[in-house]
Length: 198
Image (cartoon, rainbow, N blue to C red; front, side, top):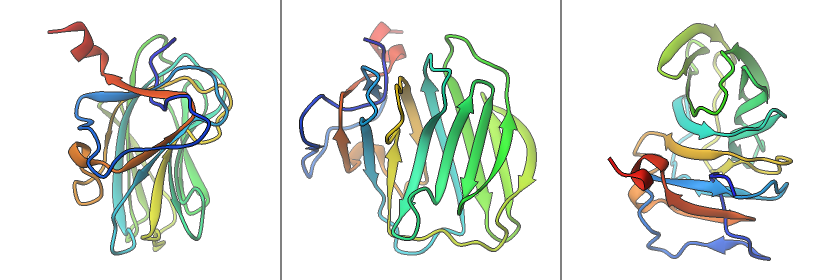
């Protein structure tokens, strides 16, 4: 099996107890090519989002389209969406509209991606493996709903990926006490660097 971000194979969802294990330096591993494996992270927001930044690291051999990150609200399933339609391209959606960023194709390497958005200007920032890309405009004045679930790899055919990190402001999520629910064939493992030693 390959290392992915994921869930254990159970007929029903697996809810982590109220005191979940510390996810610091851990990854979700999607072990197979399921179309129904995903992880739901519970965000605790009291107000709608006017600005945000999402950072994640993934490792996959897929060449088909897949979703890396979805911020789903009651109003919209993919109110924020980071989508990879093909190797060398990312699409970043806010409120159903998107901008495209073309990046170098990576073979057998992890990819670190950050995307930011601010409502007042509509400016989207994008970083690929630590390098900034030219900024673009998207949904100026839009507000993202507050009651949300963050979904990783939901209903993506044949998804194989390893999430080595995902960063949101501590007010949104804290990795040492993250509330999450897993569905499908996914396990939590130490990230490769820790598994192999110093």
